[in-house]
Image (cartoon, rainbow, N blue to C red; front, side):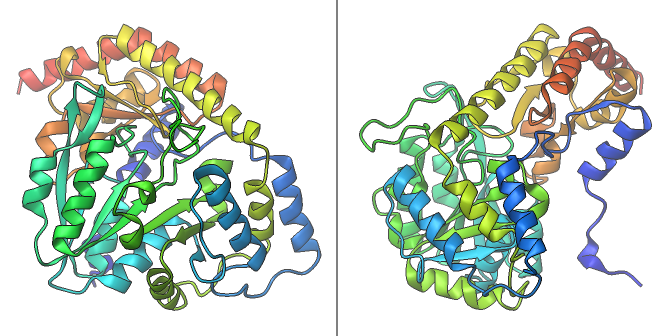
Length: 409
């Protein structure tokens, strides 16, 4: 009997299986190797020892909600009420799911930017809502991928309930420009749509200057700062990416009280509550000195640069990312038209695993990114350097082998 709404094994599982089979450096899945801060882990252990095993409040432990509000004010000068404008969720993905289920109905559509985090398609599918996508295109002015604003204007209509923005963007590593942000707000206003801003990589921004006008030091500006955005924006983030605690599944959403109240209502029927032993630990983490966050971003940026340099040396074309875990590399200069084939042989031929970017696209726009691979830089320094070494010496040969087989068919 068929089930799971036609879902299949993800590309991440396939690539991870190949990496294990060939004992490769796994730069495919975005699972960090870095250890979480000991002081955060210690607090969670203390909570366990004290018997914090039962349901937490559905909206989240008070101390964590206060810490989230303090964080938004301290880092971004965004004022939120911890009692009415914050909800704690079981990871950022649950917050996104709750938002889609709360505000969209069958016959509605949700718009996002392609390539995109693959959960967006699954979550809108569960809600029986149409997912419309707008391509990210290379913008010479910013030196990064940015939304095709003309395509965005055509994608939204009276049935658009939400525009999902992922900034910094997975998988391109782009930070949305002020012009892109303003275009998204205009489109949302014209359609009377909400904006869901997925900001899980907010503290992993590098190669980016701070906004002196706003007084923001880490180079990231939350979408809610965009003129006209606050009253229609749900901002989502997560402890997983910031603290390398992806298995704890602690996320949150902030925004206007009426929007957060709707999320809270849906969340109680999804997971009801989030681990009570983890929430006080994350509250402590959010109050760590700025130097902690800055150091982690700098360290990740250095690893990104190691991968970018190796990929360019091997002959691939790379648009240097500005935030997040990932590096996108175009294999077309190496004769590759379909990077999926290369991803399947790379663990054996080069000893490195990567994910084809086509896994994050729809059939309509798959061709735009068919020759791209995504590499994760969120690994320990030794793994990144070894992966870079192998890519320098073996990527071009692996690509030639695949290109030769394709030409001979």
